[in-house]
Length: 158
Image (cartoon, rainbow, N blue to C red; front, top):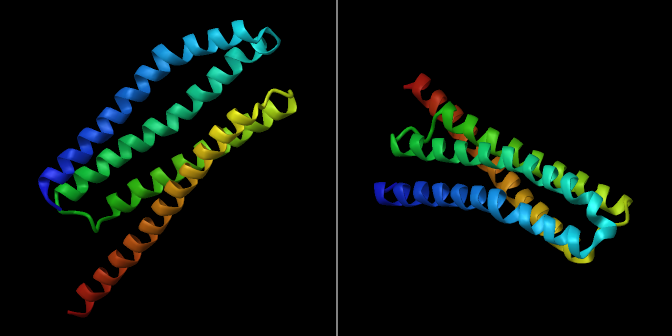
């Protein structure tokens, strides 16, 4: 892979992380406060929802770190290595964790009768997108594992 492409992807990952941090620190708290003011009957959900969203940020940043690490491995021309498989495995598990946290959060909002259809649609879109990432990482992990296994078998026969 060309070095320019890898640099572009690394910069993209960095920008995604920076935007997520800025939104988490500056926009979400004021949005939660405004929502609590506009809907006082749901004000008790302000902090549980914020905590739930912040909990999903942990595996998200963990995935970004491993994606960055995976790009470094590819840049060093070690794409077919156990380190790449390990990074893909961590990305897959992080995505699964995000899915589970969002489903738990939506179930919680449903049971306290606060799951607005718009929030449900956004939550389902996040769950679906994360599911696609998880499945894609799992497929790549399996493909890379079998490629490494074939490479080892070929090295032993030669």
